[in-house]
Length: 298
Image 1: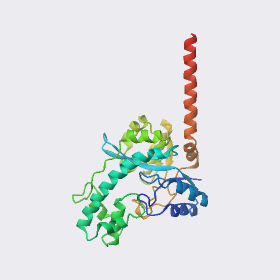
Image 2 (image 1 turned 90 degrees about the horizontal axis):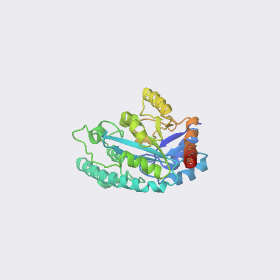
Image 3 (image 1 turned 135 degrees about the horizontal axis):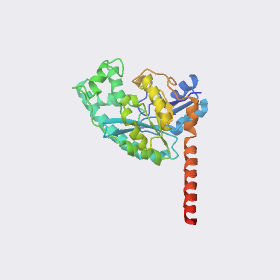
Image 4 (image 1 turned 60 degrees about the vertical axis):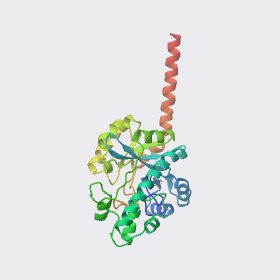
């Protein structure tokens, strides 16, 4: 069975709750998902408990926001199967504080431009750990100023190219720091949807920093990019994953759970990756010890 390893809930910028997400997956015939809320691991334990009730395996995950200052680009990294997910709390909290500050500035600017209150906007973020652009857009939709989250008004308010945008700067952790934090927590670092932020030219650098794999199957990657990424992963012996980046009505793309997924073969490689790496390290350590012992005898 295929697995959708990139799904969001109301805890970040998704429109559905954890149980609803799992029920949709179950009724869609998807037996494995990962809840990968932005910079938030709060739904992991609850997701796994609810998943067992419906026969859906919920893989431990989180999507961490970072920034490549050299390239001047956003980079999102998916962390999977962390042995100590609590160790990611610090980096999640740091990003959350920065995002909350930026969200409040954007909210104030929007409330000053449209006849809505701050409270009206905040109510649309109920249940989330932060205030996202989708929540602001939802408030504007309910006030009759837009008919969808992503469209002309969104571009006017939230794209850097717009002269009338309300964007506020958000400082994200660096890419190297983020990869190190994932590995420090015993997790697997996967580059999320490289097509979304055009991260292709930087992949070689990220591999050198310890990247474990790439999200190959994604609504943000073109068929040509998917083919290129598949070949690159095989050449560099990286993990291949896939996911819908499901956000419900808050999604930039219209996708259903499982529409983009990780084939069973690659799911098994992901699930067995840490054990494989441990065996490789043990083998290398034994070989090094033998070489050292032989050198002493010689």
